[in-house]
Image (tube, rainbow, N blue to C red; front, side, top):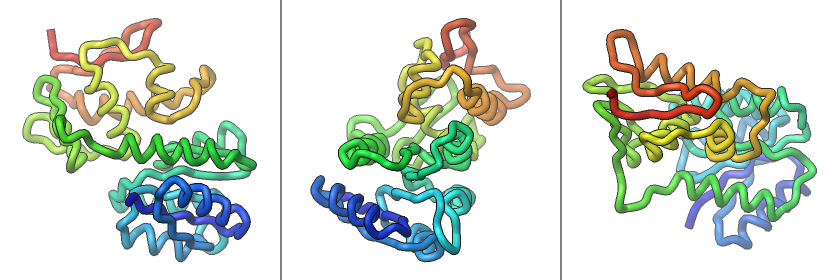
Length: 226
């Protein structure tokens, strides 16, 4: 049974989350402040975390940043009353996997949790992806280019996995945004460009044949060198 950690200081909202996710067969544990939630998240054993953005003692953004710095890749659904695009982008850039604004519909929250859990599961039939000398281990989440291990942030890993699963195909910006970040494409954000740029610096380092290419007017593709 998947285990979920809910970090939420509002008791009514927390009870709503716990009840909804429990009804979907998930085991849910509740932490009512940021300090307790961070300690539980670091201790591990959870398949997903729902995280309030504004918390007493330690705020949600600090929790996300701390977990990602510690290389803890547990999927995180951020839930917040802060609905501005800039706030959503801050949460995602810090390492959050999805962002849901309050007030929210319980069934939508549950659906987003299910999507994140499904993304984090690995089919037994495929445990490794490869393009040229770039390899992605779907079990350990380790990426390597030749003999060099690549240090990828969780969102960078998901972006690379999506590109490699569609190697040789042109992937549109809309497809990337909806698959990796889980909501509709916002043409006003440069979030995808920022993450593609970071991936290129790590994967296509100096002296190596570039694998990620930009298809002008369409999107991006990763493929074997011609």
